Amino acid sequence: MPRILFVAILSMLVANTQAGDDLLTIYRHVLVSDPELKAAEAGHRANLQGKDKARALLLPNADLSADASRNRQDRSQSGSTTLGSSNPNFTDTGYRLTISQPVFRYGTLVQNKQADISIQQSQTALAATQQQIILKAAERYFDLLSAQAALEFAQSDKTAIAKQLEQAQKRFDVGLIAITDVHEAQAAYDLATAAEITAGNQLASAVEALTEITGTTHTSLAKLTTGLPLHRPDPDNMGNWTDIALQQNLQLKALILSSKIAKEEIRLQRAGHYPTLDLAASHDFSDRGGIFARETTTDTIALQLNVPLYKGGLTTASVKESVHLYSQAQHNLDKERRSVLRQTRDAYRGVINGIGQVKALKQATVSNRSALETTQAGFEVGTRTIVDVLLAQRGLFGAQRDYAQSRHQYILNILRLKLAAGTLSPEDLEYFNQWLEK
Image 1 (cartoon, rainbow, N blue to C red):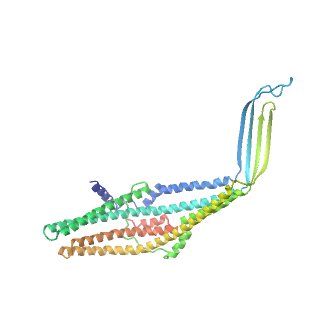
Image 2: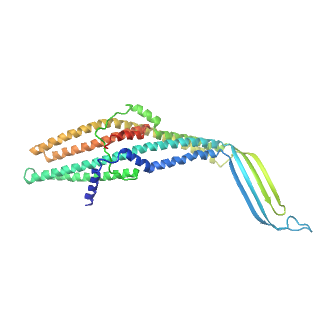
Image 3: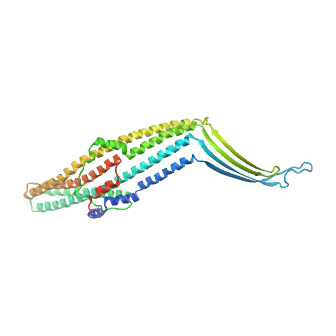
């Protein structure tokens, strides 16, 4: 009973997919709800504060400190002379105002340059995430449509086999066929039932995957129309696409900027060997009681030169560490460059091969439908067996399923190609959205 109920619910989901949310609707939900995008946006806002932090190191610093203390003083007398006040209890007070302005700090200049590069890197990384969100929304959308199509065809296959099983049983009962034909039909029915359960599980998983990024459950999605045009990439040359990808891929750009930050870190750590020069001014006031009570005001202005001599090898070790980290960044950059080339070429081939595959599978559905009709006619007159009918029937349903999925993959490969080239935008979703059922 639980399995029957599960399949029945999924059947209702499939039945309700004739009209529903389109691709742009799903994308808008993702923009509002996807945690990955929200985290990237928050991280970018945090990185923007790095410039203010670096700039603050170039600006004056002002500090005010104050003190107050209550004292008790024991004093002695010499002859008839009394020193100081006759009150042995007194209060000391004072304050100090200090203002310092960095004049030369090489490390601070490097940190400001790092902050500028870091903001560029953060902006690029956020743009890369936004492009990935476009692809992710489309992938989850069409994965769900493919899962729905797979369940539809699994159910159609099972229904058709059930009819063949019923016919085979009736023919056996009147002695027209052997019991082996009934067993063949029963075995095919059992396999179709298992395939339906598998397809149902895959559909449930696809629904959850889409819910994960939208925050709401979407079971009714608009399907592709039959009029989807099949266009080759523009430019229609793999080398041109790889050149564009190496120049514009956003993830690659972000890693290039990260490598520059790592290179600047070497300069920053070497700054630990360099002297620093600050301009400092201070104003001191103190009011002291007791035997030698007095008020003092002191104003000071000075240049403060600090020359680092030895820190136990800390600076040298930090420089070596930053050199190795820069080398690591360069290797990661090379790895990403190779990955971008592979992704671009795979996506380009996917589009080209996808066009041929869609056309071939469309023709395969026509051919398999004719083959099924011929086989059924042969079975009626005794020239074909039930096994032949089941195989022809399965071939038709398989071709229909693969045809639907091939069109989904064609669209996704176009989006992947544009993502690799760094040109993917919401307008691409708008274009394919017009080929969905309204």
